[in-house]
Image 1 (spheres, rainbow, N blue to C red):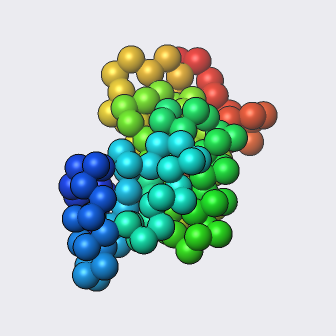
Image 2 (image 1 turned 135 degrees about the vertical axis):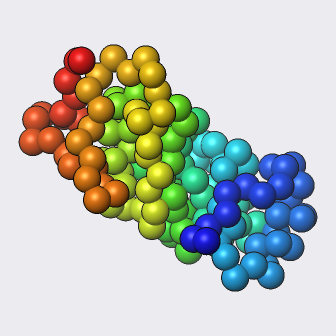
Length: 137
């Protein structure tokens, strides 16, 4: 097991902190860390945070969350929900700043209007196209 995401209610700060203190497996705050203001409160409660661009209001705030987490010594997982290639490729652009990436949204979404990113050996194969390299299906 590599990590555990938000094992208890986000409102149960004391239990999350106690588990994190005793866990050899990284405990990652997810629902408890949605916007940049939440990152500072995650220190001491979790080993790291899960940044999801759909919760954080996009790439700019997501990047700010990543940078703040790193300043506080927190690990960072960039994740996603069930979303299209647009959101997942935006997350892929930030993935080099993170410790882990879990951005499989386009592979779980049946109504993705964009082509799914190329994927091999567990990694996205990014396009040389401008921007995110999106193409309509």
